[in-house]
Image (cartoon, rainbow, N blue to C red; front, side, top):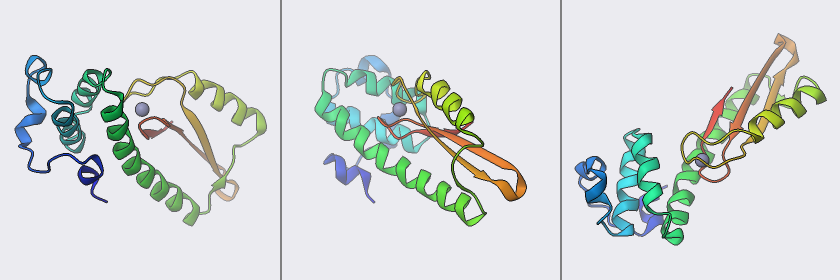
Length: 148
Ligand SMILES: [Zn+2]
């Protein structure tokens, strides 16, 4: 999927735009900031992504389109991760109802390290055959997820 097209912003972005200092970035149009944020995301410059997203706070429409584009990519990677777990004998679920409750409570109190949104979602997977349990926290705003 072409996330840049989803945003309806120009694709002829200079890679350098992801490196522009904040005072310059603050004079860019919301679309240019969104493009810079996507470029920064693809380059793995997550702190810059956060900074640029902060500049879009007053432009919720552009911010929302950007999050949608980012989230789509993240959802795809999470799906691939879950598929991989399931092909190796894992099924959705926690070791116990108490473990699920506790892990859900912990991630619900965490903030997303990418976009700063509070309240992450929990998914757990277990493979009783090898006595293994793996859990992820998911940000439903930007789609960032991580195993914990
Ligand atoms: Zn997030």
